[in-house]
Figure 1 (cartoon, one colour):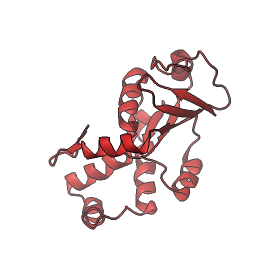
Figure 2 (cartoon, helix red, strand yellow):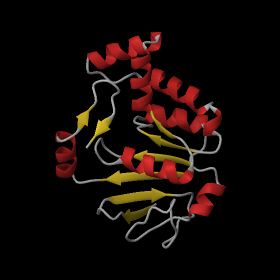
Figure 3 (tube, helix red, strand yellow):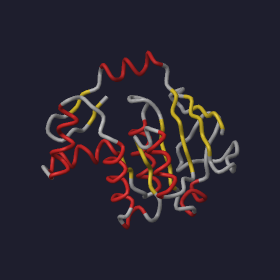
Length: 178
């Protein structure tokens, strides 16, 4: 594990199969004190997990990495919103949890992710955003696939409160804007 600092002064804790070194670059995303090598990342069919609290910037980093690496950004929150929007039978069940302000049970989230990882675009790697959130989800992920890189984004609580207070959510599509 390494602590890194991005240009906006966020501290990142990075694990990369013990191979991370100062001076490397990750998809050209430049950090003040740490970077990963794009060629190495692409050659590995990298499977990345982004961890951090809501408002930490997981989605922002995931979209940037997705564009640079050409691997899908998989957000369990987005998958849940898509099911609800599509009005599927699963979407109706998910809407009930959402309407009550409850978290969706691990079984359902794990099943959604298993189905998503079976798609052909995930074979070349992926970026998980919002999964795993529980020990049970982490254990299920370990059985599904191996993970090459974990980035935990640490942001001060006051910054998170400010970001979430200013966050706008589109009522039609669920897109989040800060």
